[in-house]
Length: 161
Length: 234
Image 1 (cartoon, chains in turn orange, blue):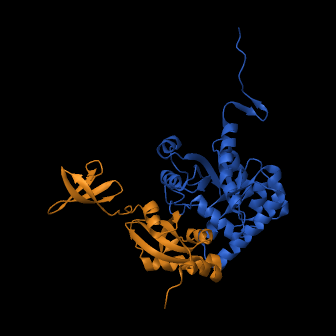
Image 2 (cartoon, rainbow over the protein chains, first blue to last red):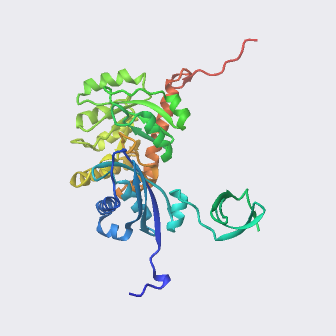
Image 3 (cartoon, chains in turn purple, blue):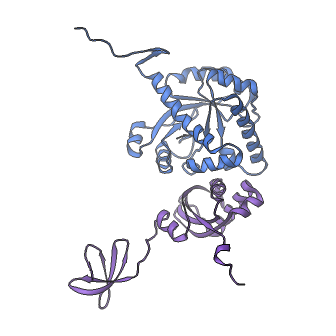
């Protein structure tokens, strides 16, 4: 089906959720999604959870710690926050849940609240070791392409050509 | 904003761990409300230094017998900053709201407990704070949760009408059960307490601790009489 024109597409907000549990807990994305939907339905009811959407966009969990991104319709973030706060157990494992922040894009949520790597800028020409090289510059660090391999550097090491 | 917690051995996490998580979540302090039989062992100053969170010592008197509770409240009043009485039966609720030595009546609506206008007026008169216990909203499911939300609404209507003092707590017993203030406010909004009411109720713990510390301090002699600065003899 043809996608909607831009002004009719829904506006999303992304909730960055921090998860914490005892070290022996095992939680997968499917279980988390199920709990999020249950929590939404129980607290907000069917219309409320339909309005909020609450689908899990990304999920990572290991050794009792994890994070997730939950997609919510713009304007429904507070009900969604309440629903997610009511998650106390996932697959029998007690979890601590915290909304770290809300962003308008997945990338912004990951960079600001999930500690992912910053935006990759385009490749740039730099001077490294008196020679002109191509480097991928990102958030102050630069991966300089040498003849055979890469060199890891920062913007202190190289001059922009 | 403060949170009132059950720490190890009453709960599963130690005071320090709860304080660490509370600091992360943006709380200014924690009130340790362990039962009389499971006192926590902690160094408030050390924790304050490490995590920047104020740790308030307190006790939760848990019994069904008002006479026994009266004795316990008298015993702990001088040592503990915050004295909480666990409600949940009509006798204990009546006892707590009519006793000036009690700071907080905890979960008055739990179990078979109920609150009416007489009790709320009593709480206003004796300065006893009624607790909104969000634990049953956060960690109970199904019909029991519906009844818990109903009773919180009823309590809120009474408290709001008589302008009674109140506190709000999620009553966590481990760091995993803690929830950040913003989350508690959002939950409050959904169940009929306003966001500002929840914020107010969380902050009330802090005000309570500050007031009681002042009263317990050596410069305080009795209401209206305090040790001040004196003129030096020439």
